Image (tube, rainbow over all chains, first blue to last red):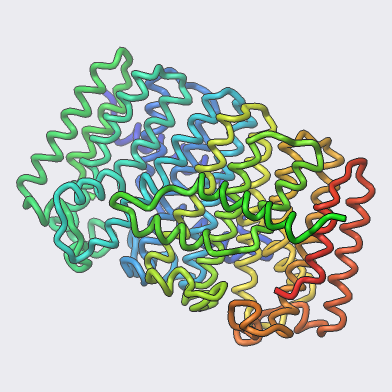
Length: 295
Length: 295
């Protein structure tokens, strides 16, 4: 039987070493912001997105270094989005993963600029993929990646989330927020993996729906933990959604229905994954673990 | 004799119509931020960077649509950098080009997110260039573009500029700021044009030094106008460098020496341009006009 925790650890370690390789050294005149970039990324995150990308790539038979710059890039995007989200004008969070958030540690101006720098560097990192693989797959992965991280993906969700704080919104707007804010980046991760591995059109589409379900389940689970967990376990204050008047699943449907939705989405993702003519037992376990996680 | 002003107008109009084509419509749940993006970009800027890109592309014989997404992208990058620069935590400017700056018009959170959205959308736009030209030139232009706009280019300059406000800094740090903050983006513009047109390695390098000189001259001229012009002419408050305790050429060397430096750099750029075995009279006039401009 597979030891899931050890397998996961070996993958997050690999992500960390890839990030070490791709993140620039903190030196030269712009040393401070380079330190702020590293501080934001090398902060003990779950590395869920790059791990999902790698495992989807492996699922479809990928085995090349071209995946590495994309793995680094998606974690940079995820990190910058948290840095900007924590800013005083947005969620105004002083803590993240058990230590000061980037703007709290480096000042607000540096928080803004370190976020910009990470976002730009993510694409600089993606551009290096073309020196490894010049096939049209790389260009297509770049295009999908940019779309899912941008105004019609993750940023779009952030924006509507911020705009609707404290307001009563129709269910379709709440779905839009959840699908874009979190699911879009999980879609970016898994679909990039599929594209780079040479998956067929149908397989890429199927990967997109699996990622959608996984991402939505992940976000609802996050909202649940914000209510049911403790700040010691989460490494950040709990109850911040209520404090910020966020429109969450939990607020609209209550804990029980939200838990049921997480299970339903995860089951559908797992069944769609099982119907593919390939197998990656670790990926299956990873998706299962997202339902049962406590942080 | 060429009517420079008309020729310039026809080019800025072309840039505006390219931007219209590439910028997304303001509709859907994220309508507000899409409006903020358009507000930030469609604000009557000089369009210097896309025009320099196009004219350099033309100089080296380029005549394809692949230049268009890059022209749109560089103006999006320039626009987002101004939006974030104007934020309260940075320069805290309420006005830009004779009207409210983006955060003043849409709120601080929207200012941050619209800037992020423009930065990301710039790369989304670049990714569409691969559907027009899949040659290695496009990948190389993308890579150069990302490097010059990022932490080792424009953002690097911004960061050191912000960090050293009000401090006495060595001349090499002041040079670093000026070379990165402004020249890097002019280098991105002109070198992208050269790369996409298929210029040789030597020509790309020569274009880089011309752009460096043009960019530095442009920034010093900006610093001069901040002292010598009026807010009516500039469309923004003058004296903001002194207010923000910026380390400018003018502060270090005085007006006269700064004027001389602008002339020296422009002359060198023009002479290097003339030594290339190609000719683009409009590009020559454009570079000349940057010395004599009053806004």
